Image (cartoon, rainbow, N blue to C red; front, side, top):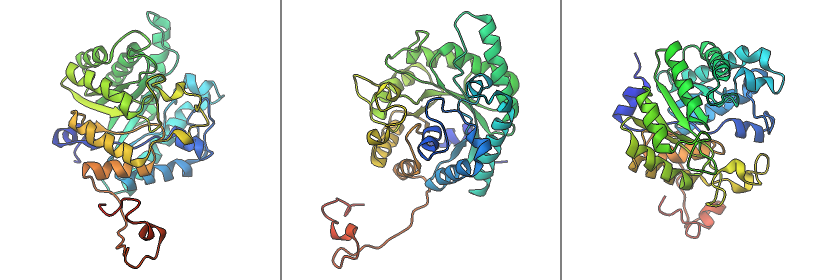
Length: 332
């Protein structure tokens, strides 16, 4: 039997994949605004190719492309009746891509996310959200572990963990998202989130999305001090600022993001620093493409596809060789 996610994390860092939903929007397959994942059913070739790119770049986990795949969220674009089909199709695509990339090398992570329907101290809303999580869990059969991601409220994250535990024996990773404040929408710090999720039995806890690496580091530090469980971090590859620390708060969101994208080398530097900070599951989120994942793989010493080239600056036959010293590639 192949090693599971917890065994791999115990042996060293695991590299996750990059962002899917925004990348697919930029490629013309997803609608900006709702960012719902019916593309997994309507245009499977587009999703399959992106999975293949991430695997080729060195990702050790492929996440099911079911972000915003709950019945309530899909209902906002008239897709509620296809919830089960969409989640099933997304799971097959990730599993097929993982298998094609090399047997047991790549794990498949089920995906659950913010539903926008959870409310504090509202039993009816909690029951509705729990039922939606249950539906997705049942549809995403056969995954190696679960990722519950992009939760703005600790209460909903805890409910997601509880539903994973009620419906599956696979490990659970839960990541929280922070926007303009260093607290969740229901008033909890990163440290408090890490402690409460750890006390509830999470296997991996962390932070994902919304913030770029620079504004993610303080949250990582808080969580690392608060818990001993495996830590995960998946920042966006879009530039933020101290004034507007989350990318969806900038004027560039949702469809003018290209000029704010970070370079592959900035994500590579993140991977190195995250490892030094004690992060075990190192990934990335919106804006991170295969080129970012490949540079992160290189920084972590992970296997990745890389064609070799023997340049000859003394007798240049390309612009790269012509400008070898100026562009600083002599050390690479």
